[in-house]
Picture: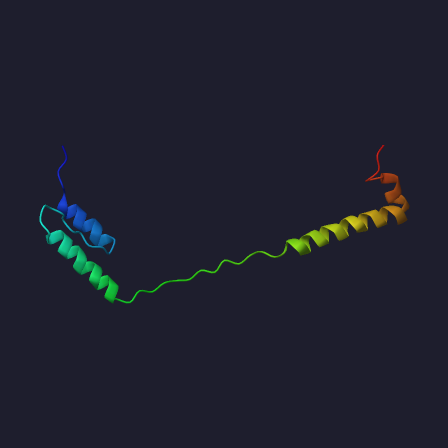
Amino acid sequence: MSALNEQMCRDVAKAGSGTYIHVDNTSDAQEELNDNLIKLQKGETSSVIYSEYNEQFQAFGLLAILILIAEICVREARNPVMKRLKLFKKK
């Protein structure tokens, strides 16, 4: 069996800037909840909007990789040292 520790519930609600409402077989809890909701609806709320941006560097990255591969191929054709390495040729 466990017992309700109302003081601890009130402390937790207070620490979280909330409200503790004890629910029993009467309609008092429902009325208190409705009163608190009406207060929240009347008050001003603030919100923060976060924008998500799409990364658009992929096309430039792919172009840079293609240019680097083309540069290696051109150097291999012109430079005699690179010709001996044969980077892209089958053995």
